Length: 149
Image (cartoon, rainbow, N blue to C red; front, top):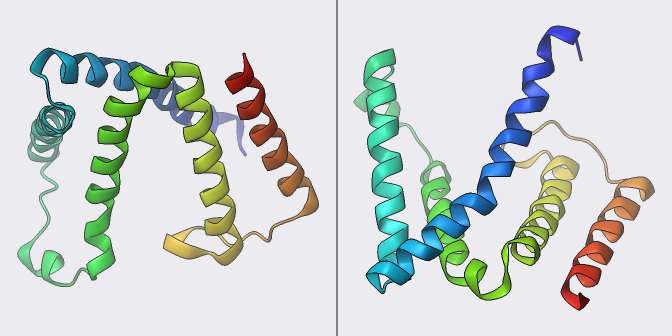
């Protein structure tokens, strides 16, 4: 990777660092309004408004023709996001930020392994290897250790 692409490495790290904070904020929001799904809805509404403003400013609104040409699975990303946000608001405060994020990371890496191996969802195909399996086992071992502590 060229030296000028350092931000491509920093951006996912920063975004990932916000996930436990987001889970905590949404968990507190859910407690405050006495509704986990309500908290997820508010979170998505604010995020939607922010993205709408960005799309309008950048003049990148999709055309109706482009929307009509989407496959059914293109629409599922929002459902997956809603599931994650709702789960974070519910489970995060109950099991703690570290265990929640360790489990979320383990799930992300397990799915990422499948996505890369088969080249699903537009990812570059990269076969599973013993070192990748070993890395995943270390992550799952870390989840086990965190849960014991």
